[in-house]
Amino acid sequence: KAGVTQTPRYLIKTRGQQVTLSCSPISGHRSVSWYQQTPGQGLQFLFEYFSETQRNKGNFPGRFSGRQFSNSRSEMNVSTLELGDSALYLCASSLDGFNEQFFGPGTRLTVL
Amino acid sequence: AQTVTQSQPEMSVQEAETVTLSCTYDTSESDYYLFWYKQPPSRQMILVIRQEAYKQQNATENRFSVNFQKAAKSFSLKISDSQLGDAAMYFCAYRVEYGNKLVFGAGTILRVKS
Image 1: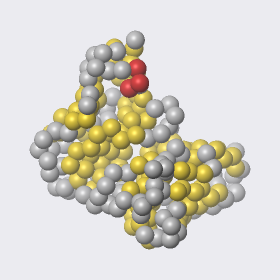
Image 2: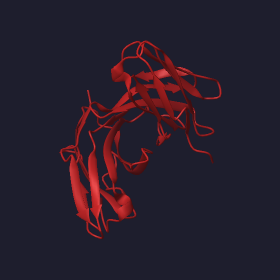
Image 3: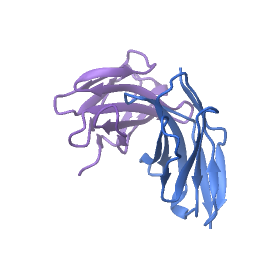
Image 4: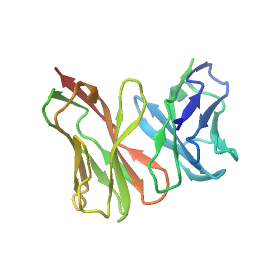
């Protein structure tokens, strides 16, 4: 069974631009969660999507948004990039809300 | 709000010896899950072990075991017979009973010496 995949793996953007990251969950998984990892703030929960609906949301500004498609693939979008958005963005998939989450390899975003 | 605290930024252990990583958490919930995740230099997060709060028995996975003290809100990870491949950042994480929002601690870097 293929694991969680994230594309692209690396991304370089400049301040003010926007970016879209993609996450394909394990086949059959309906929940996708996104996390931001930075040296200063550690691992922080962004949001979770389950069956195309946002089920949980973390404390991030509205510049961070996401969506989930009918095939459970998820995208997250960050608009008006700031230097502080440079981070490793991890997504994780799960069958539902009871089972363990499996993480993808992450997308390393650098904002210049 | 739930919080997770890992008070050891870095730990070292000699190969084949035992090491314990500490974690405390704060919650007002009675039902929840606790996890230890390993993040090697590749950055791939790997689940090491999980504990359901309603279970009194401590979870064990091969060389990894936990000491879960619900009243004290403590959840430590013991790694026995440490191997070079155990070197990584270890994160303690909390999750409410239902839902996929994980709250992570700051992490502990584990170094294994040969």
